[in-house]
Image (tube, rainbow, N blue to C red; front, side):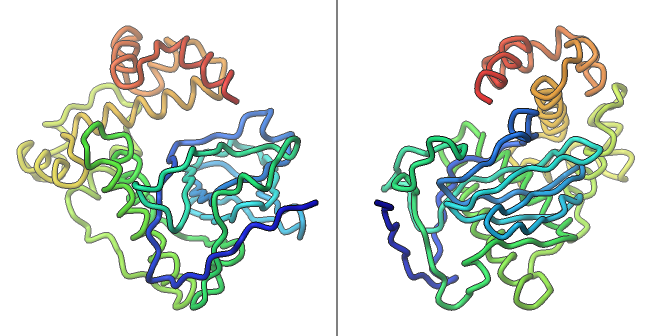
Amino acid sequence: MEIAIPCKSISIHNINPHLGLIQLFTPSDDALEQSWISYEYRLFYFLTGEGFLEISDTRTRYALKKHSLILIGPGVEFNWIAGRYPIQCFEVRFDFTQNNKELKPRISVGRHKGYDKSKIIERVCFTDFPQFNSTVYLCDMSFAEILFRKMHFAYFDKGMMGLDIARCMLATLLFELAQKVTTGSIVYSKKGGLFEEISEWIHANYPFIDISGKKIAEKFGASLRLANKEFMENINMTMYQYLTTYRVQEAMNLLKTTQLPVSEIAKRTGFKTQNYFSEYLKKISGFTPSEYRKFSRDKN
C-alpha cells in the first residue's frame, strides 16, 4: 500500500527554508546510468557542460546550459543525460518550511532501487504561486551565480552564523525565482561593485599562478585594503582567501571526476606546488588529495 505524503498549503511569503546541503556537483559515470528520486527539494544551477535532465514520468527534457537553473520537488524521478562536455553545477538540497529547531536527519538523493516514499521530508502546495508546485526551469540566470557562491561559502563557514546567513541567501534566491517566473524580471541585480567585478575575474583567471591580491586590486584601480574590505563584508574572507578557496573547490572537483595526477590538478588550478595544494586541502577539508578522491568515489 502506497503511503500518501501530506501536502502543506503555504504562501510564497511564508517560506522559511532549511538548507540541508549546498555543494559543487558533477554527475559521475555511475550517476549518469541511474534513475534518481530525491527525498527533498533539489535546486541545480549549471556552471559548465551540456546535456539534459529528463523528468521520467513526463519524458520532459531540460537543456543544461550555462547559467540555467532547475528546481525539482521530492518524489520526482529524473535522469542525467550527458552531452559532449562534463556537467558541473551547484546542487542545493532544502525544504521550504523547516527551521533549525526542527531538524530531521537529512536524507541523500536516492536511486530508484530501494526508494521509500515515507522518507520524503515534506511536500508543499503554494496557494498563491502554483508554478512552484511543479518543476521550474529557467535559462539566462547569470545573476544568480554570485548568490550561489556566497551561499556556498556561508554554508561552509566555521562561524556560528554561517548556516543562518546561507539560509537567508536561499530565501532571497527563491523569492527571486518567483519574481522571474511571474514577471520575467528580477529584483536583485549586480551593482557592478568591486566584489562582483573581482570575483568574476577570479573565476575566469584562477588557473594562472602569478596572481597576488595586490596585483588583482591594482587591476581594478583599488587598494588591497579596499578590495579586502569588500570581500570581508560580502563573504567574511579576504580576496586572496577567496581565490585560494575557489582554486581548492575546482581542484576537488577534478579529484572527484578525473584520473589526473595530483601534481597536474595542482598545476591546472593555479597552485605553485603540489605540496601547497595538499596542505591547503587538508586544512579546509581534513583530507589529503588521495583520501578525498577515495572518499568522494566511495560516497558516489
